[in-house]
Image (tube, rainbow, N blue to C red; front, side, top):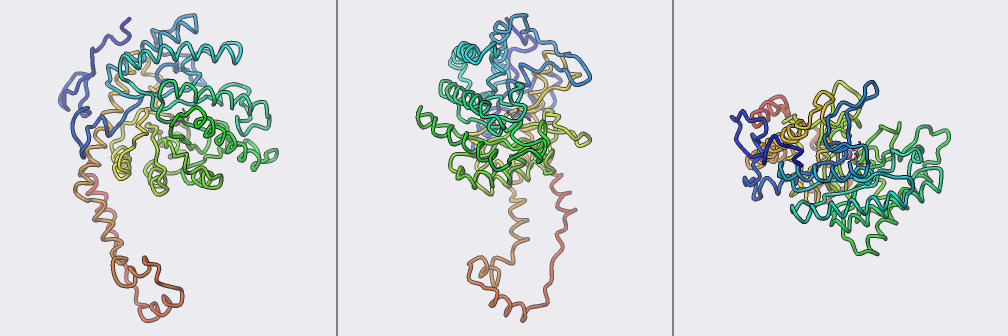
Length: 435
Ligand code: XUL
Ligand code: CO
């Protein structure tokens, strides 16, 4: 079956093309800062938004036309594998990500769910071998089922903790089976609705306990995988424990998990936390913990996680700049945790939306590379912090100074003069790069 007959393969045709099913900016083998665009960007498609989302919202029924749907859940799951790999090949995307529940029906028992996962991952494995497409990360959905109403590892109910542990074990088994490069924990309901009945310390200790069990298990099965925490401040829970990058880092440090975990940062989660995406990436980079990104964008006029495909070049430029500063994103990647709008309900919209996201990131990458080559931010910052290059500043950085010695210095130099940052000029110059 040909699920996407609109195109044989999405090709680069340049910015002037009128072909909707062509890249206008993403050229896989174009060299940017010593690597091909494909190597720099490491795109991944998310199984959940692309294969299982039906377009329903709290006010409306499903609208998405998905030609793989049948009345038999297992048949649908198998069709999805076919369609998914067809899409990845046509887009020339090298990686994918999924939750356990995205790929296989949960059935009537945990045993049946696991058997379904085994059958579907056998199919996925064949497709991976055929196409060379790789698993960026998988994860366990520990938030949708009613048993997770009060969280998973942070649940008040120990049987729920045990069930979550079984899902994580299975997730790591399939990660090994499929050669997953990362494994993600997004704490969907790991948080609280009310502090009145919450033992925050026990809940956080238990999340760390589950993480330590996961680390121990990967050692046991000899699977080298990068663990990632994906912060989000709220939604579905009122307050989530992995609020943002800084909070997640404090958690990792407290429980001595920084050697095994990095962060998977998502643009729309950053804005929900009241940060820009580049803020979150910078925080992670300062901790040497920038692991991977979930690419999407929110709507500044709405207060929830809209998970739109990224189309804002300003944001992708600043994000790609952080990634270049980081020396790349591998073994992480750029996963489109993005869904088509409800009004984009046709099959071909799945192609068009990913093309839009890939082109937007390609433009961001090119602009970021130019900013780096021109030393735009390097020079700006070097100049702004020049007072630390010599004299008293250099001594402060050398840790030679004390409160007493600096008091002596300040008494003799109390005529401090600052220079303007000319920020409006800087922003206007930055705009020149966004072409
Ligand atoms: C939810 C979200 C998740 C994670 C994986 O906001 O981003 O899909 O990426 O569980
Ligand atoms: Co995400």
